[in-house]
Image 1 (cartoon, helix red, strand yellow):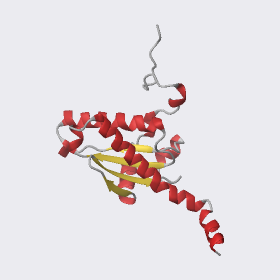
Image 2 (cartoon, one colour; image 1 turned 135 degrees about the vertical axis):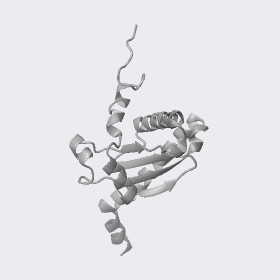
Image 3 (cartoon, one colour; image 1 turned 180 degrees about the vertical axis):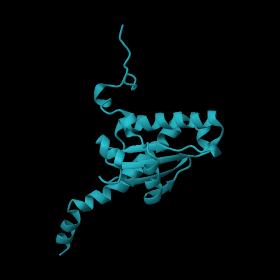
Image 4 (cartoon, one colour; image 1 turned 60 degrees about the vertical axis):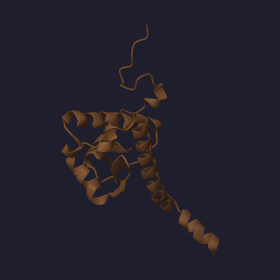
Length: 162
């Protein structure tokens, strides 16, 4: 008989279990406030999301943990329903985030806060998972131009034009 895995990742291969998802969570109130205050906001049918690139000095928790990867936080206010409904929303969102983080859709030091809408309760889980994937892809795409400009691509283009 095969013993069950205790990592919480089910029967995923070892190369996909390289990172604990709990290390990828926003935990401190100050980090949530920093994302809300300085980050960008985007809306989708099932959720609104906020994101900001994390610098080495912007988060005390990330500096202490040595976590240079993405961190994701969830918010569910009372407007989303009673405690049972809010917990169901959080469970569905955490699972969708976990699956997308394992796939490596989002990389680099970025903080993301997901704020679901009430319609997420009635949505199919596959739709929730696709929406989280869209969020991660959009955040990743928004980060790429910043790093591309820092690598010297802009100077090469200026040199070609002249």
